[in-house]
Figure 1: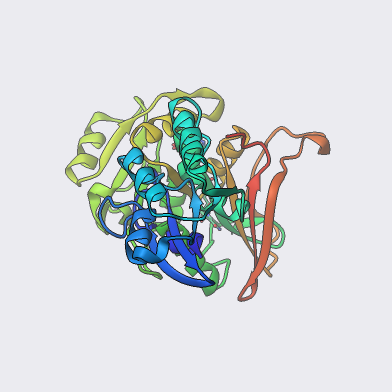
Figure 2 (figure 1 turned 45 degrees about the horizontal axis):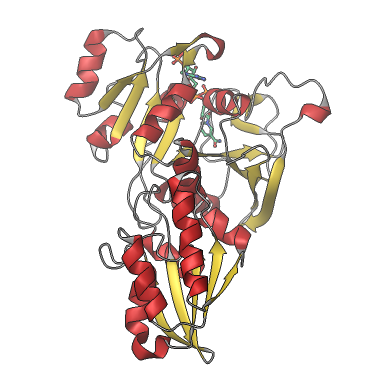
Amino acid sequence: MAARLSRKGSDRPSCEPLVGAVIVKDDRVVGRGFAGQQRATPAAILALDEAGPLAARATLYTNIDPCYDAVEMDACISHLVSAGLDRVVVGITSGLPGSNDLVNRSTFDRIASAGIEVVTGVCERECRELNEAYLKHSRTGLPFVTVKFAQSLDGRIATSTGDSQWISGPSSLRLAHRLRRDHDAIMVGIGTVIADDPRLTVRLVNGRDPLRIIIDTRLRIPITARVLAEGAAHRTLIVTTEMAHPRKIDEMKDLGADVLIAPYEARQSGVDLQELLAELGRRSIASVLVEGGAGIITSLIGAGSVDRLVVAVAPKIIGRGIEAIGELGITSLGDAITFSSYKTHRMGPDIIFDGRMARAGY
Ligand SMILES: NC(=O)c1ccc[n+]([C@@H]2O[C@H](COP(=O)([O-])OP(=O)(O)OC[C@H]3O[C@@H](n4cnc5c(N)ncnc54)[C@H](OP(=O)(O)O)[C@@H]3O)[C@@H](O)[C@H]2O)c1
């Protein structure tokens, strides 16, 4: 329940943790709170305030270290200790390296030395996935990267003429819009902009539009592209290189888009995507949804920069067409890219694969 409650704060950027807190006394919920519910008040304090005197001898449940969302963690822990709780049950401990780790350890030491029982690691996987973008960004400085595409049974994301709308069914499209809403930024290559002219906004569900990022080495983007004309233009970042014509850069800026000149990466014959991800992390963009196309997806997977892969597999066969993922230089099955965990489910006619890549070590 605490994990579910924390999601109510998910309209905030991913560089802020999702925290939910629930207080239970005699099998009854007596207090609730989530980060973002009331300005900077921590979830645990909101729950304690709602519980009032009922917090005495009660249990506090929270998905991540209690008071993790507090500006003044010390004061928050003091408040928690003095409320007279019996037990604190925690999903994951943030375990951040460096000074935050000390804060983390002393948090639990202080709670335990006040005679409160501490239980950690409950619903751990669910709680870790909930804050995966936040945890990766705070540990590595890099955004969490989700790649999402729709493919036919034979692994094509478009026909040989580039037609891709729509491979998957309407329910999978809604899933795509939910994913957009849940990420800080959405990224596509210039090939996709030219082929599909997408808007890259959130329309089929309620929620904020992410920053739109277009990867375009030489600024081939048409000035009539919908990513420039629809939605807030300043929410579009065009990433190019020194090869772009200065006049086209000015035109993009005049249309209200931001332009970032990134280094050229010869092996990928384009923008240095690893350098770009580091820059996005520095700009507090903690989660990026990559929606294609094949070129950008292949470069990112090949470089080991992808954390999560979501594929909608439609019951269709296309034959020759554009393959979802191109050359990765893998010649032995032992070198195939694998997943640490994944789930599959049906969505209308499609099968959704949702997996976490095996090598993410943060
Ligand atoms: N089914 C789906 O879910 C789905 C989703 C999206 C797209 N699509 C389809 O995919 C097709 C487009 O695929 P695509 O491969 O041409 O498009 P893309 O990945 O969107 O764009 C590729 C282009 O991006 C530029 N680029 C710049 N830096 C790069 C880098 N480091 N690595 C790779 N590319 C880089 C290159 O062009 P420059 O050198 O000119 O910069 C490259 O040709 C379309 O037919 C579209 O309909 C399908």
